[in-house]
Length: 233
Image (cartoon, rainbow, N blue to C red; front, side, top):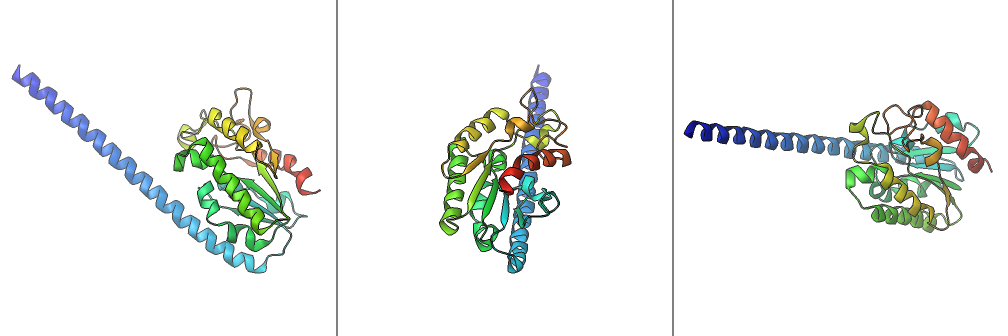
């Protein structure tokens, strides 16, 4: 009987140690990811400061996270004076803190904004808080560029089926709730691409993505088709 009790205690201790080690490993992984994201964020800001020295006013600025960063706007819109100011892993909070170097210093005539998906995972923000941050981004852009036109792209759908690790805690229900709130923001043009990129199961169509979160070339082609009428007018 004593042996059984001791065995039970030993097993419980082993399980506890495994849980602790797993949590420590997860924390270490999260800390490492945060370090890389912060380092990349600062490097991008410094690069933008250098590039801005040779910019031309009245261009079109794309701002956002990795979905914007990976968007080859220079080849999709070769006739336009476009600037890509996306940073992988960025959030609405990060974008708020870099508006001067990413938007205001360029004196753009149009701003294409796509942000918010990382807020669900990296910041664990509530939907209303994400909306409020995006409203503040818009307000600050208008404060410095009152004549600019702002095009707010809806947060894209995701597809857990393809890569649940990459998609993380993002889900279609929260994204659609956020988009509904974003659509109500005044003084902007809201461009809803959610349904265009989603399949019949309300997931990011597998032909449009390589990991369930980011767009592939076909996805960017579809996005560009939607944006062209707004950018060329």
